[in-house]
Each structure stands twice: as structure tokens, then as C-alpha cells.
Image (tube, rainbow, N blue to C red; front, side, top):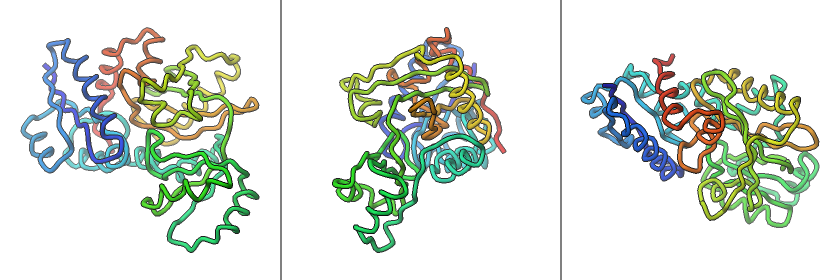
Length: 306
């Protein structure tokens, strides 16, 4: 029997999604009696309890800061245990939207133009608006540098910009990004191979936190994606290239905007959700991989990272 130690919950604003993911995974694995499973929060007791449990694999189902930014991965490496998903450096690079965007641009992967903004500097509102209008053009997207699940992401015009900006003051630094209209297409990579793609048509302005996790938002999921073979090849190759550039492991999901026959990579997620509304399980199912098979593939890819 294989002993699986699941870490879920945590301290980020994606805590509830992490717990939903853990419940879904636990429910599926419990159908098979070959697993002994323990779910634990990453609190002050988790290291002690993990040592006592002596897991064969640690299944990291945390989301957001402290869970997929290299922090918990560093602890797991110190404990010399096999764990799932990407390692310290890959997780850190993917979570930092500024650094990952620089890597993408240096390697020929299109991503929206952006500026980094610091709340520490004195703001001349008129000058900032003029700078944004010249460098990026309105509307723009403002977002934290190191959050996931579209937490605190806003689309702004020149009129409501500062009102929206006030919501992000606690972050210290954020990204201001050129807004790319068009279609939302997301690509999953599993074990260094393309798993597939899916298109999202949210009823909301974009695929934000509510569109992702609130069933009432009724985002339309379209699979297979209605694009040409050449377009499909371009977007999936870009996702695989990003995955390999950051040396990611196991599974990632890359989020793209498709506009005027060009794909723009918005970000890459090293620990995509595994809830009933999550995209990677849906893409896997379309490719005849059951939810249980998907989880077991992720478990098999667990390793001692370095």
C-alpha cells in the first residue's frame, strides 16, 4: 500500500480552492484500497506529522503564495521526500510574473507588454496616465506579481484606473499590463508532453476568479478548440516551450489570449487546480484519461527535486 501525504489549505487567498482540490483528489483515491492517505495543513505541526507518517509521496495541492512559489518546495527538499509538481526554482520563476515574462520574451514567446509599478514611489497621476497611454494604451490590466487564480486582477480604463489600483496597495509592487482582447485558450502539459487545449468563453469580462470557481458564472468550456492545425501547433508548442524553459515538472497549465492570429502567453501555472470545475482534468478526460489516472500519473512523476 502506498502512503500519500497531501498538503492542502495554506495561507494564500486560494486556500479554499486548495481544500476543494484536496477533497476531490482524496475522494477519488479512496476508491482504491491500495492507498493510505493523510491530508494536512502546512502549519507548525506538519513537518513532525509528515516524518511520523513516513510517506512514499507528498502530494502538494497548495495554491498561491507559500504553496507554489518555491517556499513549501524548499521545506520538502530539506526533508528529502519525494513530492509532486515543480521544484523550488521552477515554482519560484513561474509564480513571479515579471521574471517569467522576461524569460518568455527572451526566448521568442509573445506575452503582453507591461510595466512594473511600485507603491513606494510618489505618484503623479497625470504623468502616470500619460505614460501608460503612450507605453501600453488603455485599457490595461493590473495584477499582483505573485498571485494565482486571477486574484486581484482588474481591467482598467483611464477613468477608473486609480480606483482599481487602490485594491492592490498591500502588494507593494504590481504589474501593469497591456490588455489583449480576443479568445481565452489554455494548454495543459503533462510529463513533458502536450495534454491538450481548451477554450473558455466567460460571461464575465474575462476569466477571473469568479468565472473560474463559481458555477453560477457559467463559463463555457469548448473542447476541442476551433482553430486550425497550424494555430493549434503554435499555441501548444509555445506552452511546451515555456514549461521546458522554466524546467517545470509533471503538470502545468499555460494561459493564452488569441488575438489577430497571434497567441500571447499570460502566465504558466505549476500547480493547476483539480476541482470539479478545473481545466486540466477536463482536458485529460477529453483525451481518455480518467481523473484517477491523471492523479496517478502525477504521483508517479513525484521525485526528489534538486
